[in-house]
Image 1: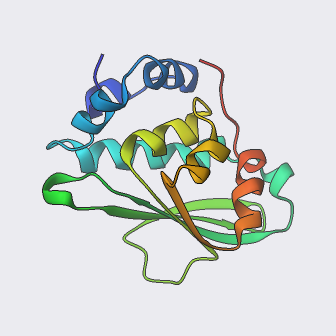
Image 2: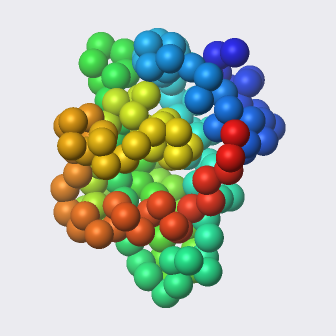
Image 3: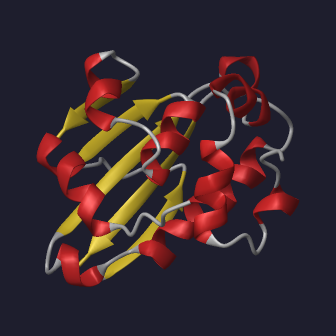
Length: 149
């Protein structure tokens, strides 16, 4: 199965995790390097507010930018996940400075958000680059529900 807007529409979270788990890095890069990239990323980021756990974030506020590389002609796309006192929203092409900025390829991004990759290893190998409040990177794992696929 491929990552495309039709596949992701209405796909339960656990099935999304299973889909990512079953794909090779090359398949993910190919799907997120093609013409459906923007729609796929929009659908993936739309899941963040749905999986937000306000009880775990408490009264914290944070702005986390995800810069996903590997787009057509070596382009990248940036989305901000904004947590603000119990709410979570997503901004495409944010203009406000983040508290934490993560830069990563498409395969690393999907593995990170689905819990199918090892975040510490990705950081150590330079596949995920982080700037800003690195403590937020750890907190993120608890602020969002990661379904088992």
